[in-house]
Amino acid sequence: MPSGSRETSVARLSAGRCRRILIHEMKEFPSHGAKLHGYEAFIAVVDTGNLTRAAARLRRSLQSVSRSLSALEAQLGVILIHRTTRAARPTEAGLAFHRRVSAALREIALAEVELSDRSGTLSGTLCVAGSAFFVSHHVIPTIRDFSLQHPGVKFDLRIAEQFAEPIRAGVDLMIRIGQLPPSPMKLRKIASLRRVAIASPSYVAQRGRPEIPADLAQHACIVRTSAQDARAWTFHAQDGSPHSVSVQSVFEADNAYVTMHAALAGLGIAVLPFYYVRQFIETGLAEIVLDDFTLAPIPAHAVWPSGSRPPLRVRRFVDLLAQRLKKDLI
Image 1 (cartoon, rainbow, N blue to C red):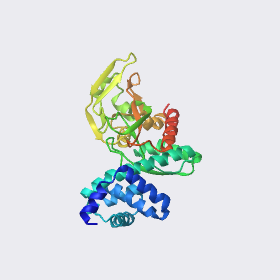
Image 2: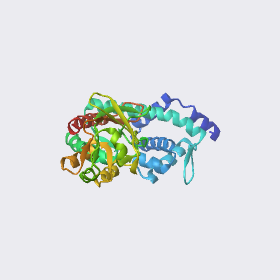
Image 3: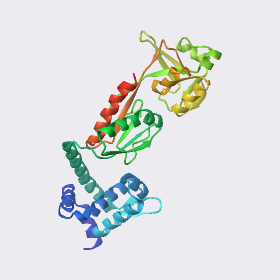
Image 4: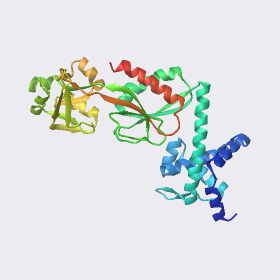
């Protein structure tokens, strides 16, 4: 068949036809699993725009992804991807084929999820992303408990410090702290995090303790620039009335961990989640100031990619994490 005709036939494959082909490959020709790997490699390359990122998403070697893609193109007789040293771009036929095959693979993945749900046995790899501090203090202890219940599940942790960072390819679940903008991503609120204003005992001894939020104008303030209310702190009195203050910073950082240590070092007053500083308050290394006022709590969300229902291992892990946070964040 001429190349042009071959490309046209590939592009015209329906999602249903692609699905039947994939099922036929798996049922009638088990040894053709390599071809399924080729489909997966092709989808990943188009989605990520790069063979290296595709390999990371699939947790395969770069050579394996390249071989699978080349073998698929040879079997189909069509060039699906234009490759350069820096990028990989789908051809016109590749784009059309991607639309059809990705729909078929999503249905297969959904079938696997449904089968796993019915069996009740959890397995596979769960990739979780979040800030280093939250992951260390809350996610890792949850993983320990979860692994005792479900030893067949392996974990892959990724650090994602920036609030607006998108879910990376291959990540099943991301923990985000703060108010989320509208997004097609699926999410579940798992906790409300108390916030407090803190200072070191040495700072309080030298500069005194603010009695009302307006007093912060005469104090050194530490600003976490990545916070959504970085320079406008709103406190609430016991009667619920708001007291907003525009703070002038003497020290700025885009990381809560650094902000905390600046406050512990006596550089000024900082607003931080209570779970960050609880141990230092309990040991006397930090003090809560303006404790007659409260700050609005910030939500913690579990976020996962939009599309089909997440696997049971993801849903069960989120359930356990939410239960643990209710106890840990009292």
